[in-house]
Length: 212
Image (cartoon, rainbow, N blue to C red; front, side):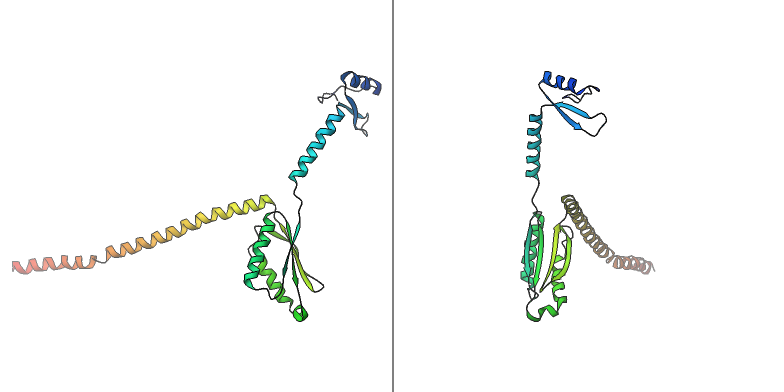
């Protein structure tokens, strides 16, 4: 192949080298196992430079995933647990993994159900942001769990679905409120109907008695 990708056909290696010299290019073997081997005419120095530039750009776009750490105790209060949960969500939204470590002291290790409850509270409502990469497991006198961020596409899809649900819920609440007002209004209109009917019944009676 030449520098533009066009086929030059099968030829002796010496002839291909001669063409490369005439064009000021290099003869590079790109498929040595083919029969016959496939070569290409190119500026090898320029090719290496372009390849290095593409690799550097790819490295810039690639994010190095870090593992952030959060520590808990079986007696961690709900307020402190809420703060740690917000911190954990920030790490996950930044694309980092989170390792949650719960440390037992003394006889606290005899009540693992308390620790699991802490993990359950921490993981409540984070399904759209993270996945549990490693469920809670014992490691000596600690219990650890690893959370990983969901792929960006899945997170964006979940956020769009959540935004779409909010207007629908608001519209449903508005319709319910409107329907209640309409019922009340109809009741107010229907209420004076009976006295009006009674007056209509009394009117013929009065007329009849005065004609006698």
